[in-house]
Length: 541
Image 1 (cartoon, rainbow, N blue to C red):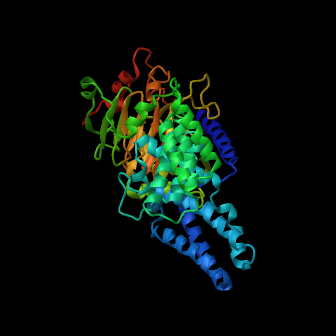
Image 2 (cartoon, rainbow, N blue to C red):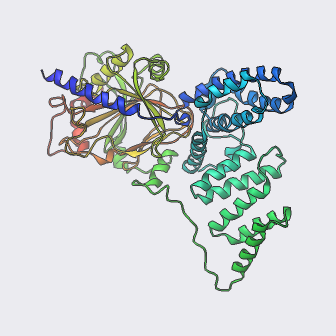
């Protein structure tokens, strides 16, 4: 009777999750690299339609063929592996921009007198194309990567990022740099406005001429960004460069007079730079970014002495006795461990295939998360709905020694361009946590990596100073609750922005119900003491 009640409550809970997930109306391509791969195929089909149009209307060949050549170069650069191509954030941003702006501009060009086939094909796919929000999201992702990993604009413009693989990488044009500067401008982040406007000007000076934006506009924003940062001397220099090109520019003349007047004051008051508040969060952003970059956040020798590697068979569990798993301590307080090779390459690929909404009938719901704190797309797979999922869920029980019948369905997530999940905790600090499931709080988290990530994308614990780089087939595990049932806030963790690569993970959250005799309540022990003494961690060999 107990198990039937639990299963009924969990079914109602998941139905609520499904209904909530379908309430998301818009498609957000930039939130998932896997989802963006469809854009490559869509673009190829649009090119085929464009070929038909060129044949039908020869009078516009010159203009249309220029567009066609540009599209082909960028599309065919993806090769036969769109996900690999789009794992580089510059390629992803340029694809979003191209699909949103340049194809739409082409549509406007040919609408006056165009073949029915091309227009109907392009119009019918209008809802499947990225919108301005996607392009803005891609631009903000590049700025986020630049800020987190301390990248200079010239390196990013050339597409030379840490960890990139040997595949085609597009370079940012003057227009692209200007758009990034404008994305920063919308956020009032004038530090990056100045940086990207300066990059656009530098590339113009180096001979890049094919640009839809003129140097006067770039210099106007550049001088304004310098002014907002309090650097009036540099703003004056930039304004003089503008007036050298257009001596009658009224805004430039007005700004020149103002800057000269302010600089001539003997008692001039320094302008306080405008600092954007988008980085003001409830966690230590400095430590978070240091951990994301892999910079050492020093552990004391005593804490380091507690970290070991061993073979783990969960105190002689029959399913692990012959083939124990490699276990590595990542952190002592809270205790975070990694298990290697818990999922094979084939297992990971099958899970990813199931999770792609247009492929898997078992992917009951898809949630596209576009809040600033999380950039990803998620899918829940029923634990008993497919053989490989059931096998991996059972394996979690063998390794941890915990009851899996009350665990949530496997949540598969694919992170998009610069995808991240800012620091958060997995448990709920309320009287009746996860009431809709009826299984108590999330006692533990199992995080399985389904892909390698060339750069970035680490899982970090800012309060504990620990981090884990994605290793395909490995999983990390930790308890969210102290042995007395209280939440452990030291388990606050985050997914760092993906710099290069396509990050896939599978989360399994284990709940309190059913663990009464698996992990007994201990009112005296701290979290780390309780973890060390749990039976599943007693065996070190």
